[in-house]
Image (cartoon, rainbow, N blue to C red; front, side, top):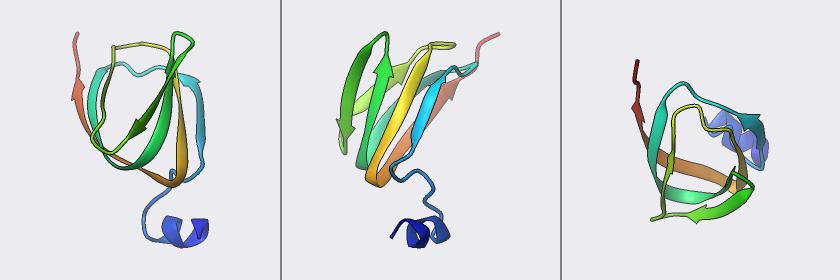
Length: 79
């Protein structure tokens, strides 16, 4: 299943992204699948319809479910 999904362009199935930062702020809306977002030792379990935000340079990690995760993202770059 995982290889078929990757062949179809989905590459975030059961994947864990270790703690990292982005040089931009994020506002996102989950549209399919599920993920767990951890920031400041708090974990959110996100599903379709859930929104989340990540401030610029905030340390966070992500874990995606067996169906992957699809979310729409808006990035805000600030100087």
